[in-house]
Image (cartoon, rainbow, N blue to C red; front, side, top):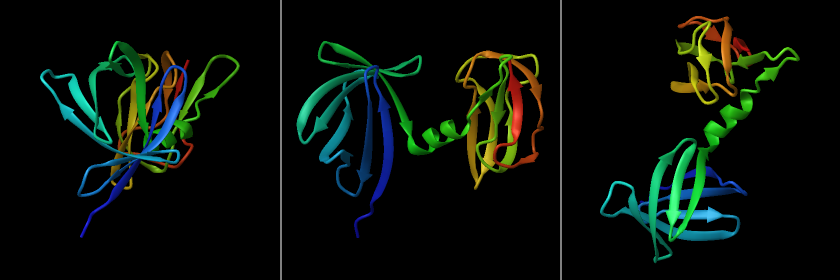
Length: 174
């Protein structure tokens, strides 16, 4: 019996965004983007960041390094900045609609009901966009809440091990 699973991903490049789905089975993965299906395989080569990408058995030599936000990918003599986001992370990011007030405050809200496992940012702490603020457990999965802005944590309204509902204000950043 053949097992199948599927993951939807979003690749953000400087000039566009590509939505694609990876379908895994007992054979090679298939990448579906739009109406195209391609068999893919990524193999490590000599160095830690050196890979061979096979797309429908056509070889491409890649160098992939972690970047500030995502990855830096080199294909032939071209370099690309690429951010990869899965469907779940994208949904959480969209749910964390930080409400900006006219005086520059940003309310960080819980994207789902759950239990606060950890508060990682504290009052008076300087935070930057992407920094961890809290970890919420929902449906036996830990979800990291990250800052959508740079600023200073002015007020933390919730404590660790406290239950929260969706859209509960966790903290304010100014």
